Length: 438
Image 1: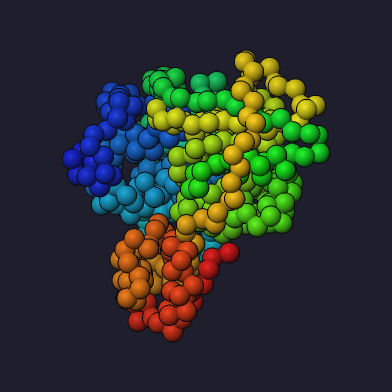
Image 2: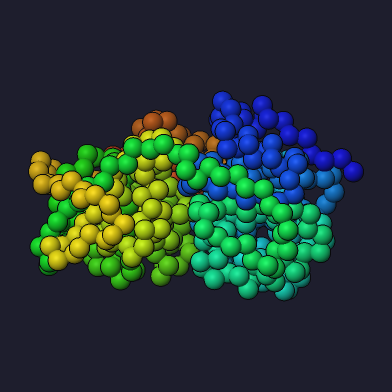
């Protein structure tokens, strides 16, 4: 039985790369002589492409799930799925995660995928209900393995491993090297690829000091010093703090996106989508946004509440100054807050001069109530929007097609007219609800 042959030039073209980076090529080379790999690599380094490359040559010409990829968060599962689709592989790919209808996932297994990606909890649930056959799975990938352990998925992962009878190899991906490999994996030898400290970046550390009861005011003043269309994440230690900040921003009519574990999954996806497509300049988030989500390169990371550990501080800062880019990390603290020990040198204190009015984002996210299950694709959406003579290609931004909906970024100055003109129009000969996404 022949293995899949990797066409590197075709993959590079599909991904829009000129070449694979050093880490990706090293992973591919190492997979040829090592059954088990531990890849240490920071966020934003292209690790998803790296481990997918190593798995492709393991795929054989037979039916059934052959590669299982586990990730600790729903957002990371969706990000991995998007990378797999961008590669335009000749295999079926399924994604399974909480907040997604179980019935839809079960139906998708009627024709088994070759590559399955999911969260440990949902995959273990499918295995328990025997919705797919595990006998053809030969290789397991654990993305953000350290995060999976931290989130307490050990029991689910152990059950998953014990339900796969023919494992031939493992690939563990971690952003840190301080992990212990659990006994249930039964890995005797593992080859480590350490790219965790090769990322040269230009991270500038600054701080804003406010009066004890004026922290929210200080944050707003900080926002007013930023240039329009910059991207900023504000990190909080607790979801209640996120909600309080957002209430304050609402009072001052500032557009934002919010992201924490208390939101329902569809709302979490929409909030990230608005931040990705430029409909929101600020993302107010807990530390679940520090790793494993698909967001643009950031100009600023703001620590509204200082994290308790250096590890968390590092992961937060890792959202900016990625892949040799530059970025700024800003500590927002009151006069009574001491700098934690992990901050080795006193950051520069900002005076918050030259404050400007915060302008509305250039883009608005529009919802269209038809999606992949209705055979709607991106080109259909482009054609639908450009049928109006006042719309140009430049008025369309990021388009994301979901199972039952499409979200498209539209220039703010065209959005109201588009909604009015498109109200009774059809897409793919079907009526579709169209409105501002909230």
